[in-house]
Amino acid sequence: MDTKEVNSASTPLIISDGCCVHFGNIPALESVNFSINKGKKVAVVGPNGGGKSTLFNVLAGLIPLTEGSLTIEGKSPSEVKGKVSYVPQKDLINWNFPLSVKQVVEMGLTTRNSFALFSRNKVNEKIKKALEDVGLLEKINKSIKNLSGGQLQRVLIARALAQDSEILLLDEAFSAVDIGAQEDIMQLIDNINLDGKTILIATHDVNNLEEKFDEVLCLNKHCCAYGDPAEVLTSEVIEEMYGSHNSLLNNKTHFNNEGSGND
Amino acid sequence: MIEILLDPFRYDFMIRSLITAFASGAMLSLLGPFTINRNMGFMADAMAHATLPIIAVGVFLGFSISELGVPAAILIAIFLGLIIKNTSVGEDTAIGIIFSSFFALGFVLISLLNVTVNLEDLLFGQILAVNISDVYIVVSLLILVILVTVIYFKQLLFYSFDPIGAEVKGLNTTFLNYLFLILLSTAIVGSLQTVGIILVLSMLIIPAAAAKLVTETFTVSIGVSVLFGTISSITGLYLSYFLNLPSGPSMSLVATTIFVFAFLSKKIRKKGSLATVTVS
Image (cartoon, rainbow over the protein chains, first blue to last red):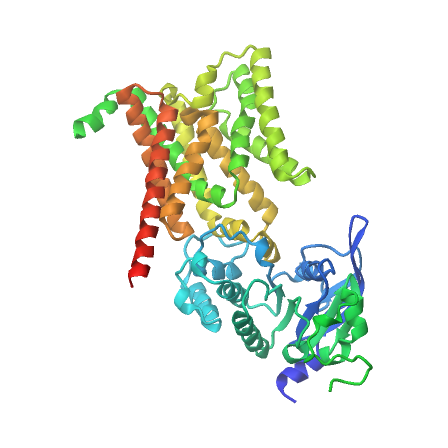
């Protein structure tokens, strides 16, 4: 058993206990229970409107719970801002700004006390290290408008790395990027995960999750299932999330149709 | 040539006007790149128009337009910010309602209070009428806008690019939102005497749009925008002096000319690079 397994087995980092979020009278999340250990790589799946982004917003301390509790290391998300870095859905970012790659990554180091116009050497070093980790150091002074969708996603991940937070939330990290770029991003996420960071990724792709993730959280306003993808992604759970659309899963995915394991 | 350039300096009113034109051109074009990239042009136009009732009441009470600057700017920024945040009709619609109703209210107040203002000057600017205290106020506003923008540059940039990410990172996004609205409103109100309510938008938007066409990154576009903005305001004032033209519209048209050149230069460069690709 390696270090990562010891840590993940013993340290619950995020605990959701009956977490509920309502927007007016409309429920977005209802009685969601799960516990994520440190160092896990978790896929959050579910239909549009199933509450994936709402859960991420709660974890990021952006919206309060209506009922229940959700804690990160025993504290509410708003108390531990900085421990979580968030890569939002691409369409929530204002891409009109022709920023340089460096400026975007530096945002991971920007706080409410950042008043200097020019970056210090220490900050520049961290930016370079983060860009090196995502393989984009040579693009440091390029404008983001000249980057591909996959490269933009990697720049945002570099921003999160520069922040050096324990938890990384990626909302729809694989949308609008081609398959090659998806593989690059997944490889990158694996590397980050090896450093002990806990990673949650909202995704619409329910195929081969057991190959990519330690755990899966299935949401359709409530928690349909949580655990090892090979065990919990049953046809019932898929139906609970998406209705009778089991064709979503390709035949490589081994879901427990009859509780017979994943052969 | 030098003699021609120095000729306006024979007159005190022209020296005052040149300083004011430079200050207005610089502060508007400094905030322009933020404004266009955040798609806030309509909001800025509404801010300019919403000043009319404040000017009507202020002038009625004996204040000059530049003296009203900062308090009017803060009032407008907070009011617009609150209305937009708390309305359910959509941002554009809310801005449209405020824009037209405040402009209408301004005209009604001018008539009701029997305020003696030259409407044409108010709408299109009359820089030649600035006095020395106006100059001090506008230059002070320029220094204030530059200082605050520089101090909060990184936070404003983060908030403008990714408001959610900024909030997650712990930045005070409500403060940053109102800070930018107040800065913008200050630059607009401070420039009303230079270019007027209607044309203030041209000095805010056009230099920034031209700069965006000829630059690659945001930071460089700010510098180029300020350069275009100050060239527009000073050149416009010279044209107005030598050709006896209205000053506000002259500045606006110089800015437009720069934009057209920037647009054509981008088109030509694009065609050139496409041709290179085809040949190679």
